[in-house]
Structure formats: C-alpha cells, structure tokens
Length: 65
Image (cartoon, rainbow, N blue to C red):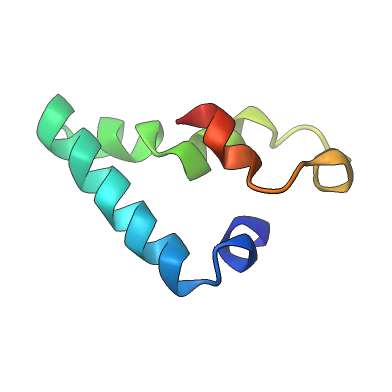
C-alpha cells in the first residue's frame, strides 16, 4: 500500500501494468513477468522484515528496477 500511495495510486497501476508487459514480452512467461516487477521484488525481498516500513526510503522500489 505504501508503494501505491507514493505514486498516487493511479500512476502505480499504470507503471505496474507497463512493467508487467515489458517483462512478459521479454520473458514469454506470465509468472516470471510477475516475479520481475519491481514492486513485487521489493515486497518479497522484505516480507520477513517487520520493521521495513519504518526504515524504508521514499520510492525505494527504484532499487529493484
């Protein structure tokens, strides 16, 4: 939800769809395309860190592009 709020929700979904299709056409696999989306990579990489949102920097998903 933090990622969505940072991008004013609508831009999050636009970027999400664009990134998904970029990876889908490059990898030819829907599941792998989903796993390569920067928002998902950030979420999966930090899902065990319960304090992540407290120390997360603004637009930190860019690190996973």
